[in-house]
Structures are given as C-alpha cells and as structure tokens.
Length: 459
Image (spheres, rainbow, N blue to C red):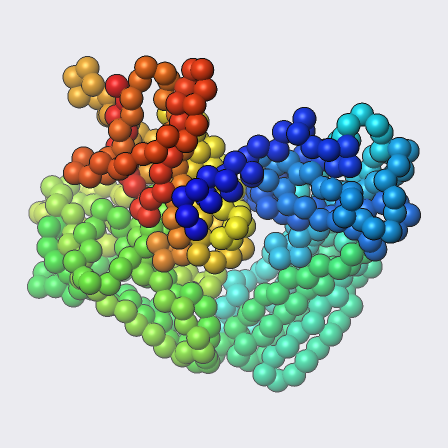
C-alpha cells in the first residue's frame, strides 16, 4: 500500500463525524469489553419487518459505526419505522445488543450505546495440553441472547456431539478426552449461532527442557548459575508422546544480547522470543548464543517456554562473584500493559492507537495478514540533559516483526515549532512529510518498519 493510501485509510477510519452522514444512515457507539477492543467488529442492522435482510458495517477505532439503510432492498426507508442494530462478529466471538430506534427526519438517527461481550466464555480446569486425563472440566458463561449450548468433539478415536444446556447463563460440565488430539467446538445459539474451537492434547508425557552451556555454567538447586558478561549457548526443546501442533516460544530476557544469526521477536517489555510453528511433531529444539549482562550483584532472570497454553519458567542466576550473599530479582512479564486491550487486525483494518502525548497524534499498525487477537501499546520516556529534554517512544505490540507490513505515524507540532525524529541512538534521521495544517498546528506523517525506540526533538 502506498503512503497516500495509508493516509486515506487513516482519515476514513478516524473521522466518522455524524454531521457528514446522510439521512439514510443510522449510527451508534459500542463500548469495549474489559478485555477486548470493539475496533473493526461487525455491526448488523435490519428493519423490524424483515430480520433476514440486513446491512453490515464496521466499528471504527473510535468505537463508532454508521450503516447505510439504502443497502436494505426489501424494506423502504420511512419515518417511524423500527430499526435494530447488534454486534455479531463470528470470527472473534463477540456480540452486543440488539438495540433499536424509530427513524426520524432529523438528518440521521443514533442508536442507544451497546457494550461488547463474549457470546460464550469458557474456562478450563487444565491447560490445553494435559497428561493422562480422561476428561476436562469446563466452566461456561453465556451471553443473554446466546444461552443454548452444545458441543462437538472430534478425536482420532471418534466423534461425539452433545447438547449441554438450554436457557442457561452459567454452567459447569465435563468433556471426555481421548488420547492425542481432541478438537472441541462449543456452539452457543439463540437468535443467532456462534461457535468457538479449542484443541486439547491428552498425552502420556510432555516435557520442556532448557540446558545452558559455558565453561563456568552450573545447575544447582534448580538454578542455572552463569557468569556475567559471558557468551553462553542455550538449548531449548520439548518432547511429547503424541504429535502436537502450535506455536513454540523460547524466550530470553531483553537485557541479554543475542549473538546468533537467528532472529528473535519482541514478546513483552521484559523478554524476546524465538517463535516456531510446530505442525504434528513429537519433539523440537532450538539453540542460540547470548551474552549475559555485566553485573556486580547477583541477578536472577527468567527463561520462558510456551507451546499453546502450556508454559514453563526456568530460573537463571548471573554472578560476578559467587560469594556475594544477596541478589536482585528481575521481573518477567507476559504482556505490555494492563491497559492494553486485545484487538483484531488485518491489512485493511489496522491497529489504531491514540497516544496521550501531544506530539504523537496517531499510530496505525498494518499487519501483513489477519490476526484475530493481539495486544499493542506505546511506552513514553523523557530524558533530561541540562536544559534540553529528549522525548522517546517505543511501539509495543505482540505482533511479531514478520507479521507487520508497516507502521504509520502522525506527529502534531504547534505553529512556529519544528520536529525531528531519529532512531534512538541518533544515527538516523527519519524524513517526515506534511500531513495537514490548521491555524494552530502542523501535522507530519511517516511510514516506518521498526517499532523503535524513536527519539523526538521539538525546537
């Protein structure tokens, strides 16, 4: 996509001003759920007379939508008719509403606000990789309009279909598990039908393994002791009794320097990971070389492994002098921020972040392909050197570097001021283009391929 196209896309998704829409539009606002953003969720709008003939539109990153009633052919637009709107997003499993309004001649009509919620929320007594289990306990919560449930279970040993409950909102039940792969499809229905697929692996055994190799490296009381400022080789692997599929992650602390030719990806504010897509394998391994941080006080770090929802932590203690009796514990985080909501994204539906800092107006992350769930945030820092302030920001996202096409940035500067953007070390200046101007501000834009950190100079 060319830069001009990015600008047009951003303009369209951000500016749904109700004064711009025609009298045949109906609009509304959808609040986020506690865990998930409503951005790009699908809204269905229909007349009371014919629910099967409907029009659809997307919720933009400002939580607004506007649907065109002219797209409904079976019912003519007229004042006084009753119109319904609801969120029904099969891919993400989120719903809201329905809400209704009576059409007026006011120019456009606005629905009551809705709030996004999961049609079905399932929690499990175990993770999706289990060892020698005959069943798994599922706790389920169903949305009001989707409160009939059944499940379908496919495995190498057979097929099972079971009705679970009718007119239920909270329910607990056991699902049998066969050896190997079990594909469970939960189906909730009422006015509409929505489903969610979960894959379980019931194994005879499953093991994560981490080994660390260097001249002075030792395993002692479940800790790997490794010297500071040294090159070490890390071996990360798993082995299983049955074939298994999923994303295998092997993660190391961000303070450690990768010396290998392999490419690691951001995982959180504390860790980077190697990611490998596993397809029907009983075992897999990766090895790489990293340099440990230089430290005087002993430092404890975490190595992290994950396959699907099954994970493991390995403690590493870095030392300069073994006889120092105390040590510092470094944190391990799986996410970027408690405020970051899960979002769906695609090449036509970017992740749009509206930063709190005045100088950065907008960040839009365009992926190469559809991603059903991701987390993104921005970290801001300010460094002072004498009278001069240096602004830094870093784009944090669970999208890997290989999944991102580019990142589109818009900066805001008061008239009479100038702005320059550099890579963090100041070695590369990033060229900006004028995006738009107002009486008080000039906006600049640029597309980048890196997440930062970026250095901002305003003068």
